[in-house]
Image 1 (cartoon, rainbow, N blue to C red):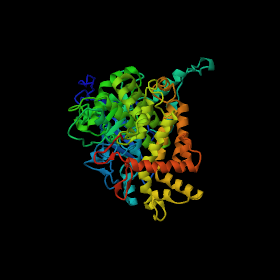
Image 2: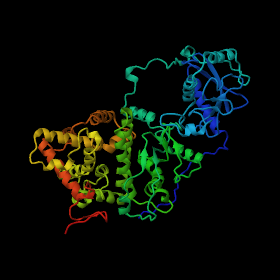
Image 3: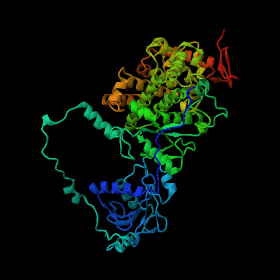
Image 4: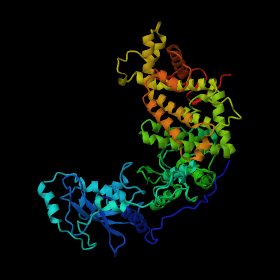
Length: 616
């Protein structure tokens, strides 16, 4: 067994005593704001207090339309990992009487500021302040904040706010309500002289330059604003959220134990984040690099995560990420015992990566179109990393291939006790050494038939639940299995039965098609070459093909369409009915389906020991 050494990786720390780290970051953002200011705002620097900015914000809609609010912004040491504080500037008359979330002592209550910790700590994804936030983003958000007082106000109170502040001038920053950036003032500054237009012949038309430019824009950490393409010291990955799972007290590093963990309690978020930003967030929370206490961190897109799973990207990038990656695998596999009572084991790769890829597939069902492309990119990078691990570590390769070969050659190992999830099995097949096992792929009709038989057998439980549920929309005087024992069946009855069967397991059918489609789009002979050539991003034709598939799969409503997209040779309703009937028998024999409150099984299955025995 490969024993895990103590991590020897450079771990960034956030030193709050260093020379005004947060202020320096804010000053960089202020320069960016000055180049491209937000219309209807202006930021003032207090000369004798570098931690404090004053801001003018012009309200552009609502009952306060036209009012300019003068307020104060205080930059903390841990900015931007911790949001700034805000309050109405001294002397400006705008109180709780004018706005529900403006307080004299506590300041402004919004999830973009830190005055009320519960606000930004409980902010939802795509909302509130995140470590990638900027002063430009804050200015835009605060315009909306002031425009919505969130209370019914008499006209006299509104007019008072205008009248009391009509001639306001701040004693600290000397700013007045007339100091504001407007579009008309920026027209001249936005014009740039880039010299004479280059002739067509002098323009560089190089595919690699275009690919690198695209990657430089997308493969970047929004927090530190650096990319591994420009700085090889930058490690990039995807945020994941772990949920604490109670494990058995004994931690045994065996393939069988890790294989039989039912599922991984982890969610991946499809956005790029650097290891440096992750470690700085951990340092602010007082957590160690393994984050065993599962401190919740805020991602650039506002998701709450606990760990970072680094991607392959290239060999140098993976080499630098390797030790931390193995540490992460132990934490995921063994929970709070990981890295303390359990060492890394190669089977952790085989358990976690396919499971995580499968969770991405499930996410595709409920995501928007733009999210699906980033999810596919995340999926491709996880698959690239997993295939590299199988090629690099002989023991990972052996375990991965063993799982696939067992399913293909052993009836007992097809049972869900051993092959927990068929989607995960597909991803293991995608990393299989096909030179050693050429017949253990979905290209083999016998393997595909065995796979589909097992898949449909696992749907019987869900179909039976649907059959007896109110959502079926008809009197439940019959049951699912009774249909197979009718003395005669008409074509219409058969078609209606298959339609309802499809309805009962529609989610599983769609997830399986997403599994197959991802591999169909990605698993070309030049998969690694294309991904490496594009610096970890997918090519446009791959994204377009997948975009079309997402629309088609989400609209799936017929079992025949499933067979067609899955490229499974079911030609008519009679063959489809026979497949379902076989699935019903297989489900009983495998103990997947409970009938009359007891497990219906074939000889050889012992539910008390939770194993399937070979009949000799």
